Length: 277
Image (cartoon, rainbow, N blue to C red):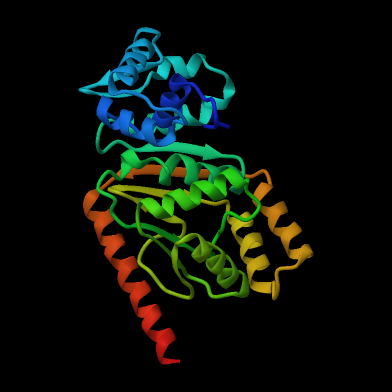
């Protein structure tokens, strides 16, 4: 859990929070964001002075002419920053390299997908359309309100598409849930990508679920005809179940653009079909 910004938050904490959500940033970009978040007036010089203090304390470091959080500081900081350190490592690798991650549950993976992949704006500085290709639509139901708020920020930053291969009641329910946050969703649509493939900027993330869990998860979606208390409990039990999810993240502009255009086309066709019914 990252520190929250509220009344009385110090400029130092505000800058750390900003750089935990978006990086790298110039002094001017940091100043503009601090002004929006701060509850008292600040000058450019005052913000620049605090950044220099953070640099001297080893909390931030220079990347070219821009600033990021210092990963050595993150390593030494309490466990609340462990996930953030993992997120930073994604974009610190050389272009073309694969990043391999493992998660212990769907909830852990979903939290990372929101906060580490889609909320990581440095992966998508041009605000290109983002895509989720999934066998079954998965929403943030059951996650914290902080994660729901993160979803709102994600969908406000760039246009998002969720393309589900299945068209069960729960797929439509989850898609409607996400639509309320601002995501464009379509169900029962075939696509060329592997199930559970995600696009953010020129980066792609592929998630591999254990086959027995994949079947159990699909069986639940196929049989549920409503979403009452029993279904909510089963859904929560499934997303918190201890399993191993293997994830690969890599950069490929051509494939990202191909899947992006495919998702946009599939969504538009789905909308047209709905209009003709």
